[in-house]
Image (cartoon, rainbow, N blue to C red; front, side, top):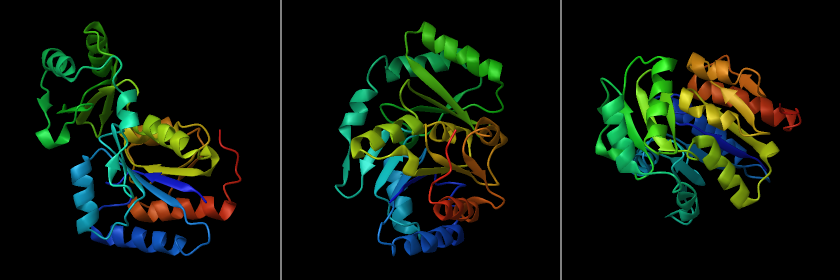
Length: 251
């Protein structure tokens, strides 16, 4: 048995046709004696993610990690795993983070309310340089906030508690499930997916339409760089790892 943790938008979903192709592939895997687990790992809110699943051909996952690693939802029990929320409390204050960003980031605009949660402070901030991102990190630190800055798609700015990212959320979930990391595959297409690939022992899939920032960041990891985009690239990569029996030693 293995667990597959994947981003949604641009990775397995770019409209119903891509969702149908991934769903058909995943349904085929469910026919094996050892049915794999599926975990969506997305920047979307929980409500938005569940609505997407209900209104598209995307298969129903076992778990949903949403809000860029700030919420973990057990789909079978229909409940948020509060233990992960407790992990995020130390050094975090949403109000102070918001005020700091408003003062320190020129030209920033806050994303809609549905994009926020108590552990995710999200903004639009277009075409920023690594130096500008570092300056923002320094401003947050000076304000006493133990936070991380996640910048993706040259526009999306997420301010999160220090522990909150997709990779840390996956690591916490694997520990809770007592699951071997060398039986885990991950997939993504943007900068906020990097932390998934940095979980020690996992097998990665970067779709061909991925941001260069992601491809560069994981180039030396045990990662399949797909020749095809979106769901087709995911199917290509998963097929490789399954055919190999997850026997290749990860970096």
